Image 1 (spheres, rainbow, N blue to C red):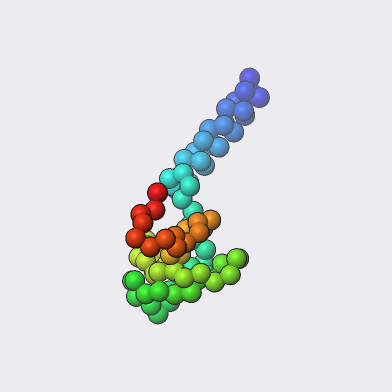
Image 2: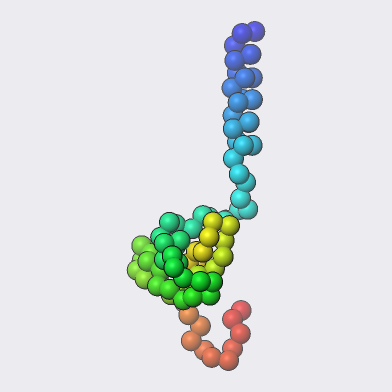
Length: 89
């Protein structure tokens, strides 16, 4: 009986700890600290060079709940669309 009580208590504690964590939509990640640093002294809409592991990329400073953050202009893994006048699929 004592073992059962301990096991139930452990599961209850784990459940409470998980529910206390803020939930984010699937696939949403927090920007790296460098993305915030790149926009220090800038204003919304300013274009900056954001430093990533792959090198520097053009990014735009956008508002977030934690302040201005650099959002890359070209999503990772996508090649720029060099065909002008055509909509991207």
